Length: 249
Image (cartoon, rainbow, N blue to C red; front, side, top):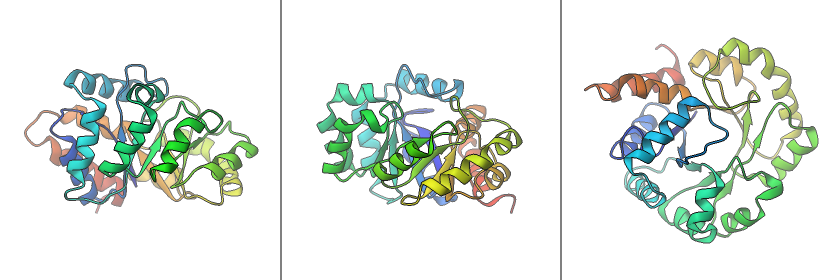
């Protein structure tokens, strides 16, 4: 189970504690969102979290500090996920070097597809960072094979065309079956994780049953938004994470 959390959301101080709690309650991998003012691939939930984080004063430097702090007590894999503009602004080489030095394991940059990512892919490889690319239901077999060839770590399988956001699990499951069949035929080098639309353990079993894992982002941020800043908000969030992984125990 991979969980997406926006760095600096809901406040700057909570990100490390949240990740440690996610790990304790079953997370295997963390996708740490790098907030950007124009998140084209994201729906309203993650757009909201990004805006809050930017308002809180999150910066790339602070994101690296969050990972460094996390590494004092956890080795859970951390993938930075975001858009290419902030990376360019920071400087591609400096970004990859600092990401590697603080303990980042890989990158997901949705608006830098394989055909256009050579500048960052080279720096990422130099500094030992995995590059994770995306496939979607409208990806051709040939493109899936290219993504598999160029990816390392895993391939992110977008279960539906469109932006991020929680959807009806049955709605997604009806359309994802044939897509995952094609994924299994064309992606043979890397593990496959399915994201977009999963909001419960039942959804995960239904949608990602033939993949190697699943990703939850918007539903997790929705739970944080519903409970923050109540006194026991983290407890509610961690209970949600545990149910995602294990169901109702």
